Length: 184
Image (cartoon, rainbow, N blue to C red; front, side):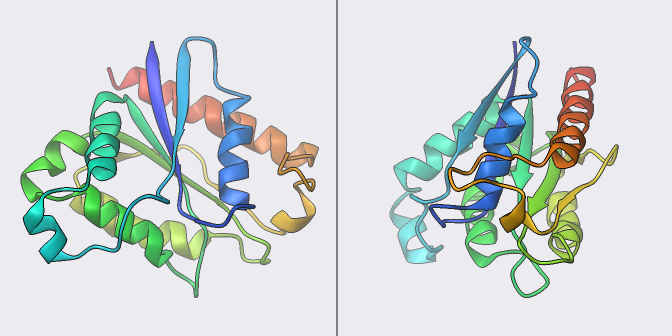
């Protein structure tokens, strides 16, 4: 069984990126499991805290990612770049540095994102690329999923109701899932 971990880079309860991950789960095949992980319990990075030990939640998430076959990042875009809380989470997941290879090394990764704005999350997705390169991941470049005007595409319960976007998401998920499976 192939396992993909999805992480949304927003703490907001009504996050469009968390909703996008939930919608992506609808399109995962029966041969694959997709689990959504939260970054809500990850504290702000502090070397003094790290010196006392990696927080339990961070260690658990690192182990989940390390045991997975692929990682799907759903990134918001804040001020034309990576959200601070999402980068903070990834920074914690790289501590101690000797764990980077175990957690991220050669791991298939895809990036998607949703925003109410008109520009989508293209700048945030591009800003992630040097980080993913530094971590030694294997980014999937088979498609790009940039969801603009998200406030009009999801209903009040967070369900993706826009059919053209659902079709793009279905294709994106299928392509990434095939990439992950071919990486075994």
